[in-house]
Image (cartoon, rainbow, N blue to C red):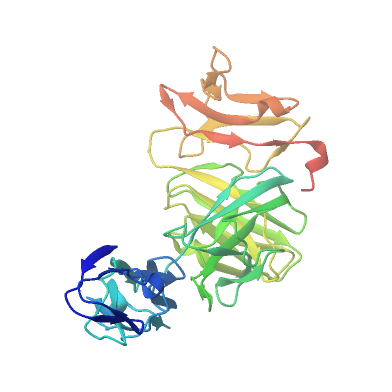
Length: 403
């Protein structure tokens, strides 16, 4: 508030002020406004992917003044001089810094300050979420947790969860939405009572209209338990084999077509189709030129067999542990032995269970007359100072024999 001495007659609100009189002038705040706009985004994230929709808005708060708007940006596509700029299908050309200011319509020479800049980044790379599963090897009836991760995870994603269903004709899989797996706010999904080998994928979406990512790469949960509908058998019956050994993989089941799959999928067997011709089996002979991998069968009707983790011994001179491929039932007897790549069974061998030496004197094989759950674990053998790789022997209860 400022007090002025008036030297001449001044008329204010139709009131005459005599010369030499005093008058107090006050600023009418009814039309005052903030002189610095804000740039807002809807939705609020600044990291976008090509094809997403976003609205950039210039907001001037306070008063009822009408404004014209001016934008300044270093993006390749200029924003129109309006208070709102809607980008319906973003591209990298929209990347840049955006700021705005207002100009009074009633007095074009009066403007606000420039707003602070907001940086928009649009990637032309299509996002692909990454799915993880835990555990990857399960005991029958276990709970499995799926986690789906997208770049910029805090930026409004919702998640979709699918089961992978084998499609042998396309050598790929189709995706079947899991129960309550559509648009969840959480980036994790729990499957209760998982009993068999299965594949899963996820995808994510956000915005309005909703923008969807591609599907993740399939991830598998493996069960070593043999199911009655489908069984993978391995000959020789051992989870360890030497490099270049010949291994026969046999798919058994009441179906006409199977595909043997392998993970990692770095070899020709990943897409090996096999049409049953006689009986219920399908045999594939395979030379183990690739590193350690997991093998299983898929049927044309969407069934999965048990999975087998085959360890490949690459060193010519190292021994190989001969241990059962499938889980051993409690109470059953089992024998473990040690061989060279010639498949000759060795004597004078030491055996280890979870890195603990089982007996101080060497023997030809390790015999367990009645297996118990305490016998489950990692085993390896030692011959002439050289050790085999470790392999896991799984033990299941009698009630799980048909799982």
